[in-house]
Image (tube, rainbow, N blue to C red; front, top):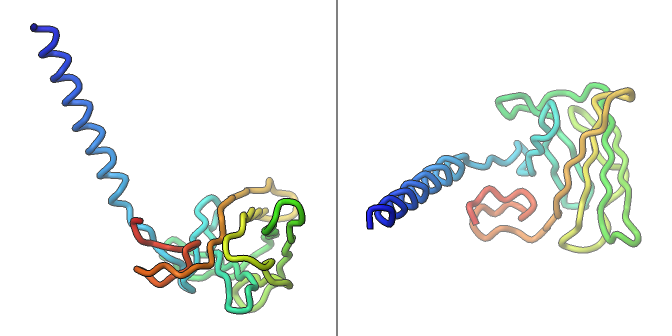
Length: 150
């Protein structure tokens, strides 16, 4: 009887701890980039991935306050679309951002790999996600950049 009560108390404590951890992690609000794109935090400086109306991709590097900073010597490559025939995008500097020379392939939900090197000699950092171009009904951003809790 005593061990059953202790087990129940231990399980209750673990459940409370799990709820507290989930609450703490859930309180971290997602933020969209200054153009309404997805923030890529795997890179330093962080980068915003934004799909323009013509389906070109704009990469904007951001400071700690989410303000654009001019690209330095970063090299960006984006590979997207059907795995059997992916499209590889390369970028050139346009103002304070890097813009792809070609558009994303056709489709509304594209597996995408973003690779950024700080410079030609640096290690490549990779982030993978789906570029879902549907609009979120709540935040009105593209689903790939959605900041809602759904």
